[in-house]
Amino acid sequence: MAASGPPLEDCLRLLRGERDEQKLAGLLVAANICRAGDTDAVAKVYRAVGPRFLRRLLNTGLGKVEGGKEEEREAYLRLAVTVLAGLARVPEVAADEGVVSTVPLVAEVIIKSTDPAITEECFELLSLIAIASEDGAYKFCEPGVIDMIFLQILSLTDGSKCVELAINLMQLLVHKLKVDTMRVEKLQGMTSMVTCLARLFAVLHTAVKFHALHMLTTLLSQKESPLHDSLRSIPASIWESHIRVGITAILQNRVVSSEKLHSLLLAECMMSILGEDWLSEDFEVQDNQNVLPVDKFVLLVLESTRVEVAVLLNELAYLKYESSKTSQTDEAVSQKQRNLAILFSLIERIIKMISNASSGEGAPIQTIRESTIMQAITGLNETISLVLDFLQDAKDHGQQKGDDLLAAARIVGSYLAEAPYACKEKTGNLLEFIFSIEGQDESSPFYSICFMLPMLSQITMEVDGCKTLASFGGYKAVIDCLVKMTEQDGMMIDNGSMFLACDTIINFMSNRKSVHIPVDPRFIRLLKALITWAGTTDASSVTMTASCLCAMLLDLTSEEFLLSCSHFDTKTLGSLSELIIRSLQQDIPDDDREQFNHKQIIVSGYRRWADRFPHVKNVVEQHVSV
Image: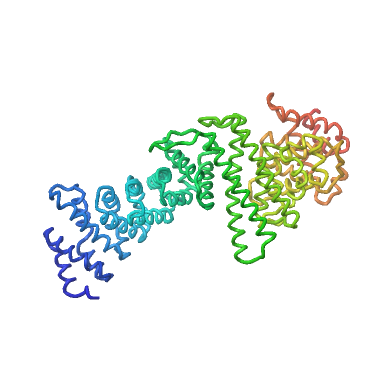
């Protein structure tokens, strides 16, 4: 409380004076009072001097105000920054609108001052303002502020106090600023933050590179963020190429595994935001950076991912099945599962990119060579084989529940969707087990079956595929999965998965002469589910697919039997009749071969079973001539 005596009163009297000379003299005393740390005294000093004079002092120091000698400007600048930094140590003062309004000026001081001591105090002051209030943090999003602060790091001495303070400020802003509710003009500031961090990530080869990497992954890994749309709207692609240069440097050099994981997460974020083809696009890069050719970059990311996946699968299997169980083990398993999920997501995107490149879909600026595609496919085959070994290990240990197992099933399904006969023997041996896998929050298998549907819809076009599915009653699981899709309360039906499930069962039913299919009560539930699905939309594709499968199922039974079932009544039979009528009345486009085939199956099926369904026949023939 020593500052509450005469020195404080003298200081306040000077600060309230009419002339600038009095105020300047008061500020010299105020600097000592601020250092003493008396909160009340600091607040009184701020009220006495007011923000207007402090701003004017900053402007004078920056040469923005006429008058004032050149040699005096640096002194004015130092005094203004020192006093503001001292005042801002009191949170209430740092949060005041007058202090917050100085952020753009202080950022400009950082750019123009050549005195490291002033630069340090500027970073301290800005950090105090950012911490004190939301308005203070969001002030940094004003045009140009982020660019002035972040890019100044390029000229700072590595390992200096200034660099440390700058990094602390950057990290503070990254974690405090929330983009979800930002206005468009503020989002531009966040966009600048990403582009500045990308440049630091590419250009620097110090510890700052890793700090920039971590901040970029924090900003870009947020799901469905408005920042993503803002980044996609940037016309120039320089920031994207900076990201690529930084990732290349991390993956090509000897760095710890955790940093490689972060760089691979960043690659996954970029593909999530800009599309899978980002990995295979060609960019021009400034700053004299050497850019790895597209083909080599694709293989570098893929091979790095494959190595990390192999290590994680091995470590997870050891921790889960061989090591002693402790709380530390549980935490280690959880962390490795999270890392594995990131890598699987990246591989999934690479699979999509390779598929696009192979089929000519998408629009990459530079298409990767066929030899690169073949090399990538060979590597993916090896990795999927390792994932299947991981699932075999789980099967051998009687484990079928866990998000890591579900993630493994998903990545296998994603790859087999593009290459349905890859790893054929291992997949065939494990398919029944995969169908039994449950996520941590699932009460029965569902998603694991959904993940296999793209592959199943392809292999069941052949008799061998149908036999594989029939060997363990897998078609029943597909039917149960399809039924469950229509029972999701309040949720939109996933038509993509519905079509795949229907295609699988249609293929299976088409080969029923080669595969024995006993009548099963779940067929009744399937009929009702198809009627429900078709009732949700007028889309011809849904009408024809649902009706086609219904027609095939009716071939196995009779009206009398259906009406004897407890959950099938005349109302349901009427809805079924209406579905058959809609499909028979449907105009099929000449180029839609699939719907044409479905209609043929419906017509031929109807002619076979119509006499066994008198009520259906009566209703249908009132509207359609078959």
